[in-house]
Length: 327
Ligand SMILES: NCc1[nH]cc(CCC(=O)O)c1CC(=O)O
Image 1 (cartoon, protein in one colour):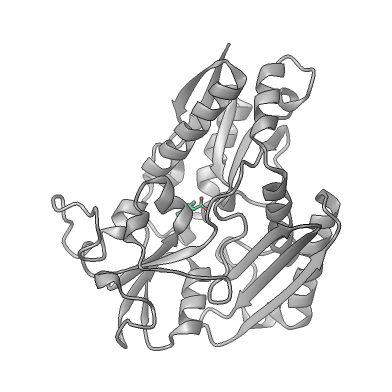
Image 2: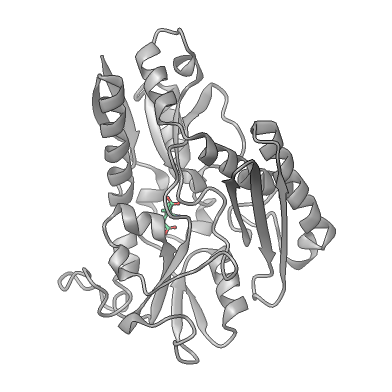
């Protein structure tokens, strides 16, 4: 049996898909093959928010699954819309890696050490708003592109390419903000000059976690793809699943679009699941934060926890301080 694993062609996608493919093959004892799927998001060059958000990266992979061009797709969970897709199942959320956002600044500077007027790049309204909340006197610059391109905007970061420098698009910022997870997967975590703890910046719901998706029929125990179903379930980490379920329930209850400045982080400790979430105004001047915990360590409990925290945020005025539907 050969299991075909669909992937985007970006370096980050290829890296995390190859790592997942290797683990699936080792656990399941079958062959795996990577199938490159080109998405709208890889081809177009406009602002992500003008393309309908990161959902474009996901749609092509899901189409390929439904069309039987591949059997498994590996997504960054934070890029997955919260709505279910008919016929498909998230069969595994492997153990999450570092959830934090990091600052990659020139000269190893921290956010507090950057001079007034410093230019900090991010394409994420969530990061932009939380950056502004921390430092009103910096300039947040909207950027896009892959991880290497973004890092290339900051002079002197370890590993930056010295050739193929694009005028105006290289070495023009003081810092960028990226997910530790992506940097770690690409071996570029040495560019980080500060890790943001959750009191400073809450990550995107699902950040640091992968979602391994397949056709629902193939995920069923005792089905025709028994070896695949078993391997997928072996890769699943239940604590990760609980945490991301709670985080994504916040987004769903807020009916938040992918450009809404919403952060959330949940983690299990002992017999409790803790969740904290934030909604910001885009200018960073208003920040609402709520947290709660539950001992309901199952999918229903995690979902209810997310809904409760979202409702606390709404009661505090989340819909008034920002356009939650922004996509
Ligand atoms: N939006 C792009 C994206 N999707 C997933 C990651 C890597 C982090 C992760 O897997 O959560 C990144 C890059 C980034 O946000 O820095």
